[in-house]
Length: 231
DNA sequence: AATGCGATAAACT
DNA sequence: GTTTATCGCATTC
Image 1 (cartoon, rainbow, N blue to C red):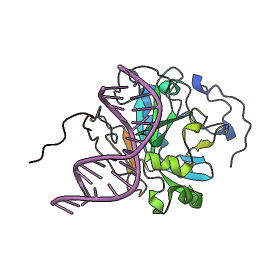
Image 2 (cartoon, chains in turn purple, red, blue):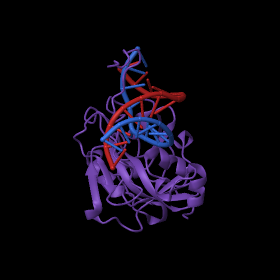
Image 3 (cartoon, rainbow, N blue to C red):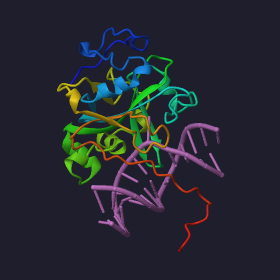
Image 4 (cartoon, rainbow, N blue to C red):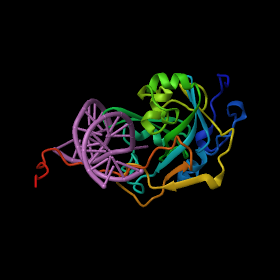
């Protein structure tokens, strides 16, 4: 593990000074306009939280105001999404569908809206702990999907807005120890997203069993609408 | 293997 | 009032 007690870093301003253990986190600090490079580059990075360590195998990019309709920041900052406008390397954890938590890594310079959704990871440490949280599932299923990944890592809303870099929060992010071969990276439309379906902002490691299956966005009938007709 | 559906709560308009 | 960056189970091919 990495020791605690690092000084603050001028990270959000683009200065890569005094990173924990001399680690280079400049990938996260790239401009928001290069969010897809940051997302792609995060494949293979390792994330450790609450006794479980994973290798990131699937991510999605979200960024911008008025340019990415699928981003929580599309209409400007809100109480929930303002963290995406802050410094890079912070957890953005949000609650969806009344039951699931999803984890994002903030990116870009302070004042820019950018984050990378962590969609899947292969458990490389603490598998028994992950299993105790996920129930009796195959190992490849432990972190297969964003909500499952959060459960495996023991992350929920209490981890929102904590640092992933300096050890002050429950989760820490580390560059890849085994780099992902660039030719094994694939991209495609984001999962479950209605807007910008033509934008290939999902990236994954081809062939890794922990990558989640693609699911198209499914429109849902509005409450109060007439029930389906019976032929 | 692929598709469909409902659970269930909060953010946002 | 509407939407939702999901999952697990059921149904159908």
